[in-house]
Length: 345
Image (cartoon, rainbow, N blue to C red; front, side, top):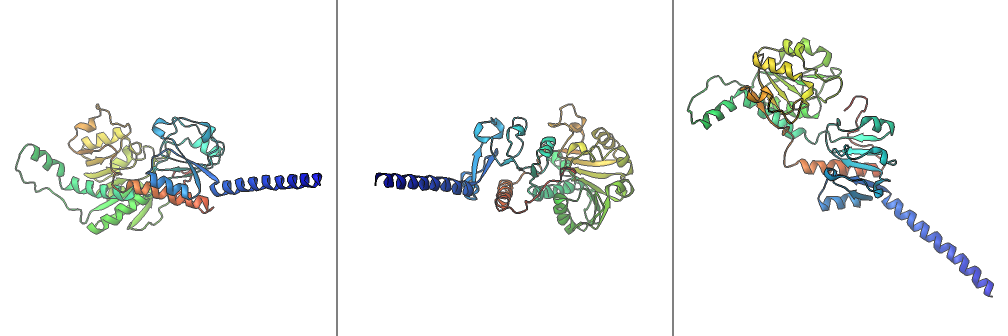
């Protein structure tokens, strides 16, 4: 009888242990994925991400420091922690969700080597930047800066040299989401809208698109030229002296993309000669723009500190992209905004 009870106890104990193992496996399956987030969302937003079934680790990328509990994270949600964060310390990391549209901060060699999926926040900043493009186009042809200067000096002087947007031609280098949102808004002004992209493929809101290798042939049609292309090896100094020489005399230029897409020395010379009548520049080859740059002292240049993206909706959109993609990742669905690492965008 004693042996019988011992056997029953032994079997029961086995079933208890199996139950514990099964419970742990179910809990792991329920939680399953561990996410390292280096951007501080609101507490209620963090809770929504946890409710998707993630174990969330937060470590502010501005003061990032590695700890062992991060080693087995499956995914990373961040802006730019890569000066302090070594991807080699995360052997299980399969996906990086950037909260920026650009990817230049990412160590792409390691991402490629480790077969990490990279998604960005393309579209998050398109609406405020599109509004910014319209604003700067109007400010330049309506001589807003000159009026503000006269206001500061209490000078009452009429200006009859103002122009209309109506009937002008606006060209975009790059026809992605920012350019499309800007073109949509500019269409209401009665302008002709041209686009330059890799293949010359047609894009909604553009009246005509050309391939980038035809830029020197058609850029002379543009009264305004807006740089809205991603920065890659192919677009480095794409807007050079040859491109400037083929522009219409008195072209207005807007750059909200990356400073190094323009050969800045060539830009300065063409601003001095008035080949470029005015320029609104939100980005520069070196940032912050050095005090020694002649751009600061040019009356035909509007300078802003990479500010075109800002709006009250940005935080909401930064959360939405993370939430949507984390939900898709959990459900084994295709992610939004997967970056083509070979193209660089």
